Amino acid sequence: MTAVLPDQRHFAAFHEAGHAVLGYFTYPRARIREVFIAGGPPLSGSPLPDPNGEWRGRAEFSFDVPRNGDPLLAFADMMQTVAGEMAERNAGGCPSGTELQNDQAEFADQTQAAVGSLYLPPSLANYRASSQTLEDAARHLAVQVLIAYPRAVQAIVDALLGAPYRRWRVLSPGYGTGYCHRITGRVAMDLMRSYS
Image (cartoon, rainbow, N blue to C red; front, side, top):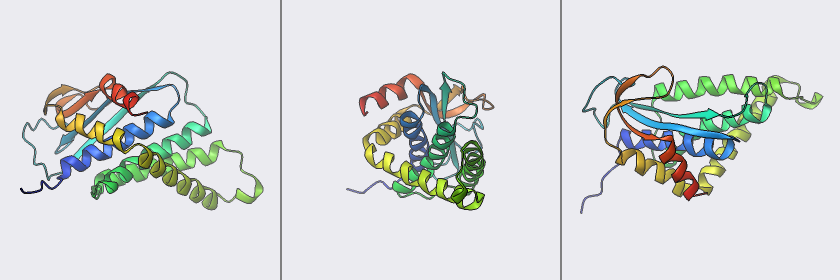
């Protein structure tokens, strides 16, 4: 029997599952709206993408509460952003340059927002030191959540890869309609409740 090696499509599924799992456990009063992955340019319309080509996706959330200025939500955003990279690396993948750049830019913005929303005592008033402390803490806690819930990550991955690769209307802002593997928020939330 020949072992099936994971391809970029599998790694993208782990990446988005990491975002979904972390968001579920760290965002109070939030719902997963959808999780999807698409081959080639985002939702390019390619019905048969290369499984080892570039894959991207999104785990989209909706919030029942205002998000302005809450330092805990800013920190949760940091954890959720690095979770995709961490889950993909745990599965043996190496995040694509584009995906990694997007997550790192988002992470830097979130770090700045989190530092700006916190009262920092004089010992942490240096922005560089405080932002590094927050980044390290976010990465550490993200890994701990992913280690605590590996079956939840795998369940999202299995559901994504088991979903048909077909034309969908994606709910995430700016994406529209295109070919992708997609699971609804209801499916994702039911899976998360099963493993929490």
